Image (cartoon, rainbow, N blue to C red; front, side, top):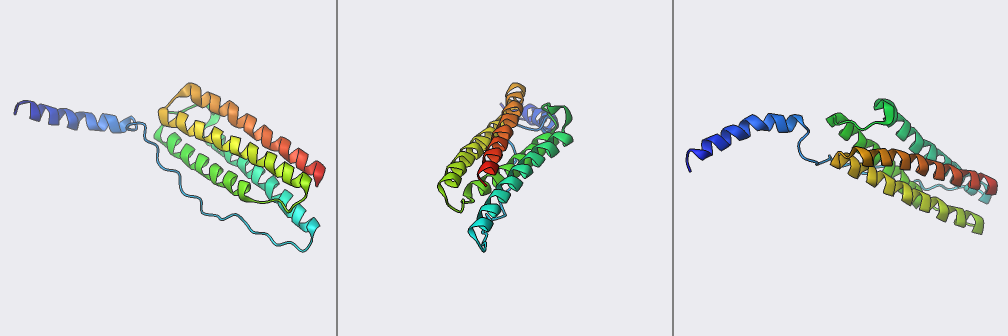
Length: 173
């Protein structure tokens, strides 16, 4: 039994660098916490409130698209990568996108039946966006290439849904 212990120790020492080079298990780093609070806007008139609300949603959706585009530029070809940097950058991208989506969900409309209905539709689209981000995170964590391809298609669809909500909002505002 004592002869086996040194061999096990030697094997562990020799295999440790190999395991570390492969990125270790399937653990992903934690996403950074959300830091920016949801903005509270005070407007002088109802028209200003509606404009501020619509503008905040438009800018938020544009920022979500920019985050996805920026990540895609750093990792061209929309392909999964086994590089540890890919996983770290994906976590940062998904974390920042999730924070923004949650802030947009928390941003309340100024009132009015049409805006409240549109806000509910926006929130549903943003909840779907969050679910897609989580599926992407799971795919990256598991290093599942086919699930990552599905994520890429789904995130594009989620962006289209948000754009459609903006078009509907412009028709009301």
